[in-house]
Length: 500
Image (cartoon, rainbow, N blue to C red; front, top):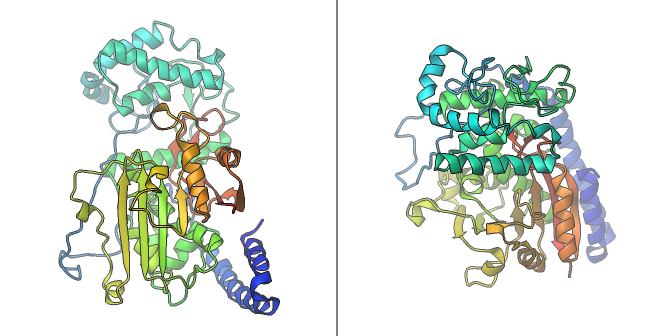
């Protein structure tokens, strides 16, 4: 069902309370406003550039030349900079991330693009190479892979990690685990060989002879994935400039990330020339606040006029939901002129805060224009706490919207192997406010809804749909890699509410 129809349905149900005539006037007004916006959007859409068109663009530079004195006043704001870790890909050189046709002569599981890089990487690889050769190559550990089911294959890879760690006498680094999680095998039949051929377009997926029939659907996404990894390896994290546009009237989000960015950047050369790594990072930083704003506009009738809005983020993890807090001001206070106070409350048993004074960690830099009229974003963290316990604490404030980003509600081996979701599901449904739930894949979101509905009775505000504000930054998928090799944060979205 289209978003326009959902809003009509919502207003129709309200007509019993406020009268048919008033509803008719509101619909006519909304229709005129949305028609005007759609006409403008259709014109702008012709100029949008998607991520695939940006793959070959060089790294873009900031559109602002800031000097150290550019800030309006001295503020104690903590800047958290997490360096990206090395990501292993079996067909990319361990040193430079360039394509490599040559596998390690011993283990056959890692690659180097040249003899020079092999010599450079050998001291670091030597110890692990010996164990990988014993367990996976000479030991026949990879000879069983073609005969395993998809689920058994996942379990087997985790078991191999345990075996290798036991023989090494230490835990593997994340990139070392990826050697076994995403091994150098045919992506179709799981045949292991040192002489597999790689896709000439993406340079990532490997094949036996005549075994590339399933790859075409994902090839362009793998091209983006490879380019992002290469630029990340060369340049570290990038810090995209967030569009900073003040709206005089509440901005109704279009159903398209590219379209929204084109509108907000006002056709700037910075956005037009943005490379795919910066572009993916922009979507990654923006997906949490934009998905929240999109959900707010669908599920909260007074989103245009409300002056205080409280959001609970359940199951929060610091490095995903809790950094780049300044982006919330840009996408909420600047796009909703009537909103004066945004309150963000992050709760989760896996929420771990860095060793920074709490008052600095929760400080969100606000522009001078918002300060002048006392607009603010308040942030609070409730680490290592289950939501169903938080709801009965003194810190609880009733939210207007609850968000669960990629929670994995359907998994019964949750936090520390215990299934704590049923209690949390009951609790957030009791509050009877809209609840936004996202998933990494199309296949997960129905399972999330089934889990919720098996525990408590709910109404569906938004049936599962592709989230227009999902992250465009790809990552590999281990949980269901047999059907979906790459995943995207907040890829699918649904909104529910507990019934009375």
